[in-house]
Amino acid sequence: MHDLVIVGAGGFGREVLQIALDQNEEKKHWNILGFLDGNPDLHGKEIQGFPVLGGMNWIERYPQTGLVIAIGNPLTRKKVTETLTSHGAQHFPVLIHPNAWIGRNVEIGEGTIICSGNQITTDIRIGRHVILNLNCTVGHDAVIEDFCTLYPGVHVSGNVYLEEGAEIGTGTAIIQGIRIGSFTTVGAGATVVKDLPPNVVAVGVPARIIKEKQ
Image (cartoon, rainbow, N blue to C red):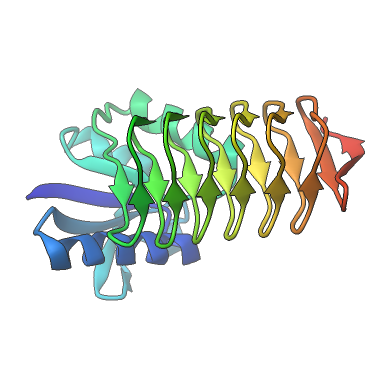
């Protein structure tokens, strides 16, 4: 068993806790120590029976502890990862729910979270600290770079390329061969039929750009 701490004590943190508990039902993977959170008002409290141990500097005393970052926003997750690394964090394990299906030749980077119901086919590259929330599908030869977030029910067709930090809203469909730029946000329920540049917000069917990010 390996020590595990969940970074982020919000709703998704509780969902990630459930993934770890479900993994332990199949095989004892994790000694779950609790949560870290940037909100000092939570320190010392318990969430579903697990303590909030402190803030990001907690890892300085326990650098060998595995950390999984349960924060949906890609840019925030990247900044938290950098902060934890600056405090000495060394281990970011992958969490994959037992009900996810993953095919052959799928590369998965450290710190990635794959929730229940995901279907990931073949010859796919998934980067570091990616979140694939409930019931997403990822087609052949797709690339999902570091810090991307796919919210529940996203469908990624074959040969799609999601650049770093792309944030794809609930129920979005992306047709084959599309490229979505870094830190671009696609609103819930969109259908993406054309490439999108970096740092924009796109919504609708078909998805259209409504603003550029600052």
